[in-house]
Image: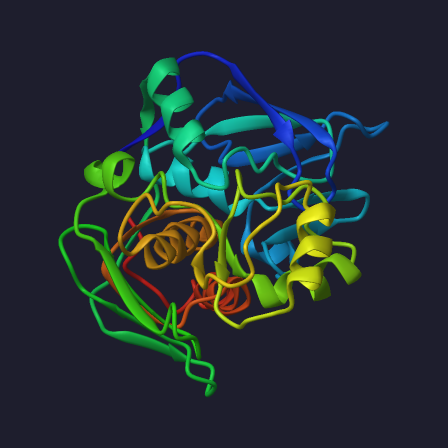
Length: 304
């Protein structure tokens, strides 16, 4: 395929999931071979670097890229949307150390890209065409198997020790269906994780509008009231286990994990032609696989 960029600039604004800051992210057309580059316009020197796995420094509740003063977190949803929509060149101007969380999915990114239009450029896109099976296994239950295919397809299975969300799967057999089948799946967490995350100084911008919260272990109503207050939410009935907001898909958590895998593997910096099967994905595991792929490019001869 040829390299592609967006037809015109657009800006998406919203709060950061972890910082709680009001953030503007402006997506601009870029020349061939630019890659997906993020520029911190709020910093004195306005540093800009390509979104690549080599810059990943943290993966707690999101993927963080860092190089000196340049730091950008929660990049996976925007990168997922750009990859799925076939955008290989884009300059993103960001006025904060985090991408806006928006509604917790990739839907608004996809809609904005579609409205801006996709422009084909006069340069071929770099693509890794998988010809031999490759497996990554962290020894802790997370496994990624990459096998030959004539197109990009992804299959994901998640497993949790939870009566509400135990094992769930999702698949994407054609990237053209991403806007309908994947983009709207929201990030999620378990209610029991909220207090520790708040204590870590994270999810300052989290609420039931930008995350799917799973309530699977009963707590006292007084504790629920305190959490609701911290999240600026109406009081929640602690007697009812389940999802605290309506599902957009029956398997929305698995679909969101699939969305994340696409975004994290986009950090390889090239298109991938393969079938990818992942069990128990996570940002740490996903980006570790991306780093290993980049580091072994000298041994991978089938890059077109």
